[in-house]
Length: 316
Ligand SMILES: O=C(O)[C@H](O)COP(=O)(O)O
Image (cartoon, rainbow, N blue to C red; front, side, top):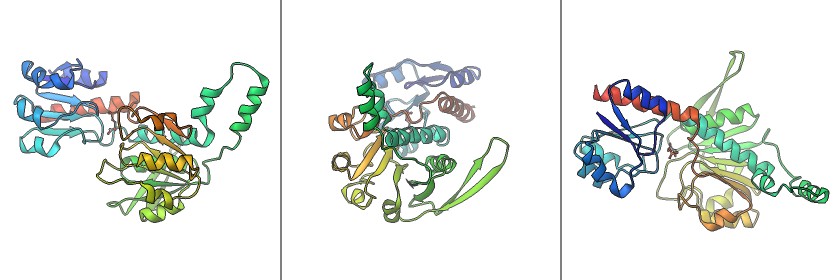
């Protein structure tokens, strides 16, 4: 059986599939050539991340396709319902990358409160006075400890974010249309465990009371954070989006940053992905990464193995 991993897959996943008799092809096929390639090579399983789109046209035109595997969480690049109607199984790995995404949230958060995104770039080669100026420019950092983080979307990644926040001594509040409460288990190096139960509150209450906000919601039609929501936020708050581009209104965000209503933003995803708008790229108040929340060796290893296990189970 042939598997095309069009956006790549970990070696652990390849090894597991191959040792179970699958042929794994890791050639990157351009979107517009996919139908021809899948048919020519009689591919039964296509594995993708967020780059390759598997829409109706591919599902209709490729009768050999039995499984569409998404290495990661978001299924917005796949016509899931249509695939199901046509008897094509869609699988993903909803838990494998939670810790990695949550850690990236804190990379952005720490960058925001200590100005790393600019300080790195501004470090002078020499000149004592330039160092002094820089020290002054970046002198007003703030600690995360004791501050309140508001987590919008309290599923797996939101809860993984809460876990790190609690470890740092932050207060955690959360809102979610579907989750009433969640128990976060903190495990310590000596085997001790402490449970924290967090009850969700309304989005409005969260917006008003958070020093920092982190978004963990799927892609949706309306902005989760628009002009109105930004108005409700505390003056000087920071915001992180490692969820999906389009959940924050970027025009309203840049305006709020320029007016210093908000102090910083950390964005791993953009409305105009893969390329952020120029106003986002140029803002000194935004820390940027190119959609790499799930891109750690550990997460990708787990993803590859989990996909391989699911494929083997379904097709055997
Ligand atoms: O939905 C996801 O899992 C993340 O957005 C990761 O996307 P990626 O696999 O393209 O990095």
